[in-house]
Length: 400
Image (cartoon, rainbow, N blue to C red; front, side, top):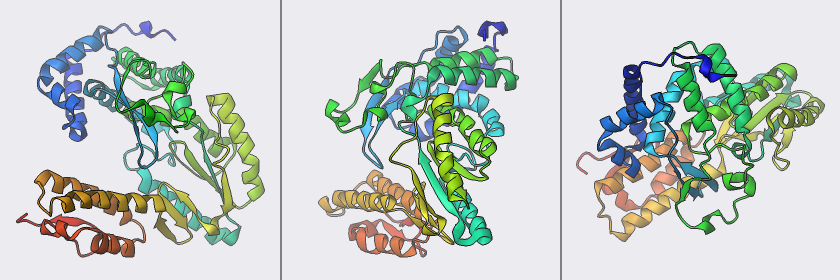
């Protein structure tokens, strides 16, 4: 499709206003990074220059920083510059409402009002409804896509995204939206990046989890807002295939992790090769052969960091282990200084612990939370913090 069919140049003043809004939205979570601080020193000029580049077709993403993180699992991340993050926020603000109207109810990732808790509750609800009707006859099938982000076909993604936006986007800056989306989708961060850390950090990382080993036309960088939303869009055809063509009502997906439920195990088993064939022919993707789990629902299953069983939800061991490790790491800091630390270190510890507690409080974890807060945390912390009555949070002592 020819993008030059849309000749009207978008209003530059409106674009600048929208970029300022994207800048303020972006800096909420990234204000203390070096890239954000450099941008903020003269943010008005940066916004004006960015608008000029976008209007005149000169915008191209900056080189990324590439590094490997080890928690919660080892994975490769490409961190975009703050300037590019502003563009990500601008683009998603323009088009995300169209995706929300398009996606199925049970696609949970990166959606307002959805997310992990919503997905867990939906799966628990499907299990409860199925077992009320069919008892122990309900079965679970859990599947995963191998190297998903690294094998997204960028050409196919952009073709489908272009058709989608031309059909549904009604503002006069369609051409700008398409050009910007194309710049982001077709960028090759692996070809122009700065490595943070050591090359040995990539040792042991499977090739299908690295952009450096992906085909030249494949792969979106993990860590970008646009990558997350576009990945969701890319798998929408899978959602439609499972729910419409295969007619599974009890289905949910979070990124590349998806679950089906049915009373007939043979029907679930027969769906596996059909799903694998659809992924291969329609999207160029492959089911992970070692991540196919099928069992009676009464045994429960793990999904999004939770273990879902009939009538109850528990926290998975990985979250418990990460919570324990985080507390121990902060304990070493305060113990080494005999309890004398600064306000920033207190805030870091408070935010870390409360983020885990905010997750755990949704499940049956009272005894776990009580043990972590009463027995694992160093007593030095209680000079500055106290435990809330329900063991659901740490609270700053006013005098600290």
